[in-house]
Image (cartoon, rainbow, N blue to C red; front, side, top):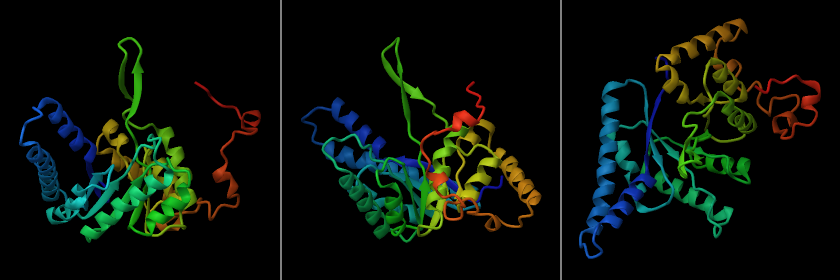
Length: 292
């Protein structure tokens, strides 16, 4: 349909852990096989994912990028080499540690990220991209630090959002798919980081049409990830996005993506401070805005 590569769904460390914890609750405390169950659950999940990669490779000609969702630096990350053996062309580390532990400092959390990256890097020769959140007090410095260890950085990952059911007193999902307005965060930070890190810079979240792709490339993105728009409109929607991109390029006399990549990055902006502006200031005094 026009995609340059496919990032497979993530293998979640958290799901494997929860599956084992559920088994612990239902099993007898005296069950002598609990260690076996721990290993079996991990191996079953990993084997299923490796088969998933092999199946994808047999059906798709473009590069296949395996995705690992890690929350710790435990030993299970050893299977990065297995991803390589299964045929993955690259690995995306989808990292997020919820900063909700009152006993952990930001340095503790960042060091865990680095430890995970070092473990994966040591076990595979595949290109590695790290997909990050924006929950860092020193985001620019941390992204640059990570970029020195890997081949690319993806800004940003999208999380499960929860809501409250006030009638049944339950936590329920909210906004499973991204919205086109979600692009604002990645657009700002891709613009800030463009030209300032090692490796590739990939934009993600809120890319819902061809104009979104154009914006992220103008900001300086080397590649753009699209997910929610394809769930909404189907895989063929990539062709529409590509068509919009090509039409825009022709209209502005651009022959290649590099002709305009980073044109609106902070480094190339005549007003760099505008990219970092956080407050509304006098916006509403001079603009008419539709609040509907």
